[in-house]
Length: 493
Image 1 (cartoon, rainbow, N blue to C red):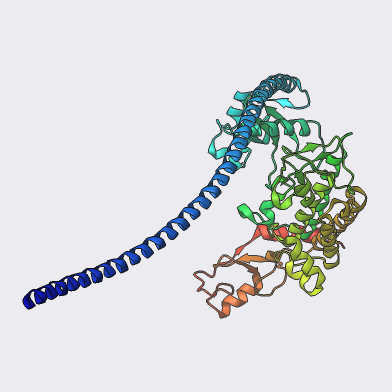
Image 2: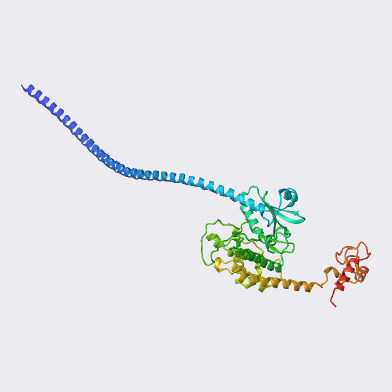
């Protein structure tokens, strides 16, 4: 009986141990499960957050897409309108081009008829020009520009300059016609004379100007000599005279628009003449100087000589040429390029001590007072606004004429004072006196007979070269004796 109780107790103990082990396992499983539940809960929260964020982004993207769609529809609508407008403009342009071509052809027929029948200038044939220029030989070429090449030749036994339109510059045809139109009806001593034209090959025939352009002399180009001050004074007046004639030659003023030293030519006597009027414009409706008006015309001319108000507004006036005249006069005084010449002269005039420093150094006898007056007038012409510039005929021309007359009077006085002065070769190198009996010595120089004879008695070298005299033979210089005698005969008693 006792053994059965012990066995039952032992069985119960084992069951208890097994139950406790199962309980512990269950507790561990419960803890694990709770941890897993907590982990899953966190993941759910994060997933919910991500889902919420995604929903928000989706809403934002929907709004953006709606806006983009709206923009796309508007852009599509605008493109459709633009295509319709472009098609309409293309049709209108085609119609305008056809009308323009028709008008151009009609205008060309009229121009050709006018050119062929115009009696105001000589019409040359193509073969005449080709023969005169040796078929445009390089040996006859004297210049070249944007318009074309210029040749020197003889036509009708007269030296002429032939300007030939470049074959690859059809846009210059209008300038060619304008130059014929303007020059064929103008005759003035200070405007280049148009002798004729050859429309067949697009060339103009001018009088030949021996001393080239004023630009060559201002900048000493092509080996040109520096001009005396009195010639510069006269040239300033001559250019102004030519401009005044252009501005008042008819019922409608002609504005040159490209006045510059390169377009001012000098003849054999250094008389200046305005040329190259291909950009000239006939003004039918003059805008008053005190009114600022804006035009839509294309600018024409050379930048440094172009009226600042014309550049700004596109409105051309006669006083636009006055600005270029002022720049040219300043260049005549300072012998420099146009860039910065206004400021340079203004600064010098404000400090009288510096004014002489800006004048051309090749001229040593500038009349200071008159030169300063000329510079002041040039600066007035260079004012930025047309309304501030002086009147050409009533204010500028009288001053330039008076200064030119002063220059001519000074030149004549200098010439008269020097007309009786003996040339330097009349003087004996030894005695420094005018010779009575000039004799040529072995060194090739001429001396007074008694002076060189006495010299050779004491020396064996030349009085001039200091080289050894190979011969002591003297030869009478009859030509020099005759010249001295003739000079003495013309001296006042």
